[in-house]
Amino acid sequence: MNRITVAVLATLCLVFDVKLDAQQPALGRVVTTGLAGPWEIAWGPDNFLWVTERIGKRIVRVNPETGAKSTVLTLTEAHQDVEQDGLLGLALHPQLLRGADANFVYVFFTYDVDPGPGVTRRGKVRRYTYDAQADMLQNPIDLLSGLPVHNDHVSGRLAFGPDSKLYLSVGDQGSNFGRNYCNPNRAQEIPTAAEVTGQDWTKYQGKLLRLNLDGSIPVDNPTIAGVRSHIYSYGHRNIQGIAFGPDGKVYTAEHGPSTDDEVNLILAGRNYGWPYVAGYKDDKAYVYANWSAAAACPTLRFNGENPSANVPQQKETAWNSPDFVPPIATFFTVDSTYDFRQGTATAALSGMSFYGSGAIPGWANSLLVTSLKFGKIYRLKLNSKGDAVVGSPIELFPSINRYRDIAISPDGRRIYVSADVQGRVTVSPGVISPDLANPGAILEFKEGK
Ligand SMILES: [Ca+2]
Ligand SMILES: [Ca+2]
Image (cartoon, rainbow, N blue to C red; front, side, top):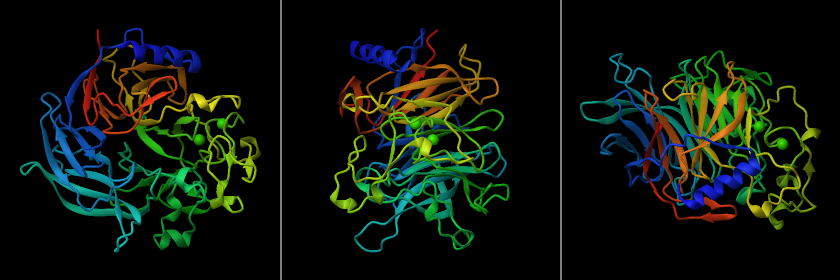
């Protein structure tokens, strides 16, 4: 660790009560570099890392020993021109290359349905079959198309559940925020039965979806407001990580606004509060300011921390839902007196994995979640029931990078991280830099003892 990193960590420990691992492993090895926006990174049954390149619109197999790459898919029909679109999620069928005739690879990507020069983004879940002889993904079959995608908060994390269902996060489109501040946020809206029958997926924004492997709606999906759809849970902002516990529990990592990134334990049919609540229902720094409901919204200047008086505002405690579920951890919750000139109180949580191995002492039964903003991994120890976090998060493997996603070797001894090719990272309190140490790389970290 260099001196700057130590200073950052020490400061954050004071502010946010996170702990440094006393046996901090040394900075890891660069496995490979030159990837155009590595986004998903998954350990395959071939002992290679399967990687999506968000910007490059490719799926690449990387040899974790040598760093050698082979491209198994170039997806030219994916559309990519903003920070969060392109080729995103990837999930491997657990029977891939195991002789069960299930050599399936599932992907999520964004595409453009505007036939003209304009751009109208949608999202698609597609299945490919991996031909090991040719080392190519072939036989594309579209499973679910026309999913809502805009120019911000795309989400797009795809995961294969222990229940043999696909889980997909769909973001809130950045509505009521940033450049889209006059668009109403629809994370709380549930489709009607007619919309589901008509395959109008507009209201899937701000949701976690659960799909059968053919893209259809599972019969045991929850009924919400009288309607069964692909929606598994709702009231989400921008889920970037999905992980499963050994007993099938579903966990997500989610970007908050200026505070309160969340780690959630997902329960079927439940409401995770956004945009009425960020983090806990505690009336701290977050107040729901509904810019989209303000008169003459386009004439107002968006300011997430200090909305103008014309914008209707509602305290978190003014909203009630019997289905609300608070997070099991936040990064970070701050009081309403917090000075946002210090920077936003978030870590930009991204990929997340469950660590079940006993290979590294003390780590079993933890969630490992990456941070884009700080270039580190947080380890959250779960209680034996897996429904709460024990103690403070532990910070691991700091570097001046944006850690997009994580994969763990089957022996539990090596941790792999994909690093963004561009973007900004916090190098010291209030100092944010676009100079990344290992842009477009995959890094390997080992337990240091
Ligand atoms: Ca929430
Ligand atoms: Ca709150």
